Image (cartoon, rainbow, N blue to C red; front, top):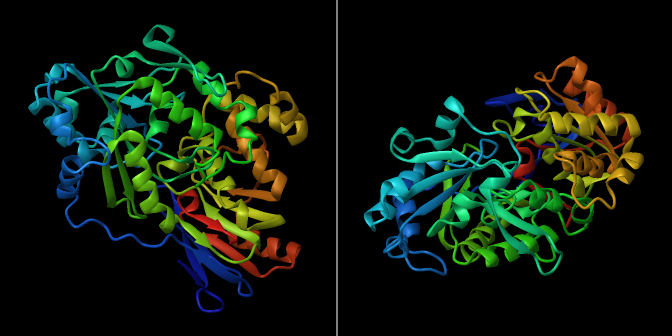
Length: 435
């Protein structure tokens, strides 16, 4: 699962934008390149999808589930996730309509959370199938549209207000689709997370992302048990009744390596069980320098999403060490709300910024990403390499911006006295751990 490249390999290729960024390593460094355990790509993805729909986890086959239903809503992730929608959306729609659901009663809903809508060419790229775009209604969720949501009350455990998109709550057949990968707050992406925050009202999302959740030590990657976000999401699923999910796993080349379908919680857990052993990589030590990426396109389109790559490898960064991350940021910084939060962070400093968050019932939109960045800057030094971020935005990152990765690695080794460098080419899709 890991390969130590001491003295033989002098260059690494980090995921960056739509390609790779070659980085020359200093001659004296002792690099350990961290990659997930390879899962073989499926030889026939279409057959694998058909088999998953016919042999689900914890539910009847889709053809049987769709029988006698009047309407269906299928959730898909937004453009920030490389989900292979083109492989499974048409089979889902065709099986649902073959069972009797009118095509005009099928909605594909983009689970944007509080992200911007996906439109035009971007929507076509996201859906990945011209037939689906031509024949099926595809719409974006809008968390700020009060009238578009239905209240389901509050969760019993933590009192989170639950309000979800009516197109999903009112559908006779509810299907969630997505990608299962490590998530730096919710443990794992996909499944229940596509519902909340995916199609939740802004009050639900902003409660999830308040400091009482974000600062919980169990709100970390690869952790479900005791994770407050995961527990609230499970409670929201129970409020909805029957929900079904199709979960996918892709490799570094975005090829399908696993797919599962069934009852949304059980089928998601089954896929987590498959992928967990592949993405958690034990290293046995901490490093003074970690060189990583934001996972390339589409995750490194903005600085907002780049923060994920800062948090995921912290277990193997020695306290006071340097985390160096490469992210193209082809779309720049992110939302205006995130920019405002980063301005406050840069002005106030980490401690004073965090003090403004504690005790809030509803987090300000997108300030949670700034709060997650605090986890990295409290642990060590964070440095950013980016060719897409405007120079005037560099101060708003609240980290050190560098223009030479080789020199940055050398400077970190000089400062820490540790020649060991953990290199994580694919960023937050891989979770290095000490144990």
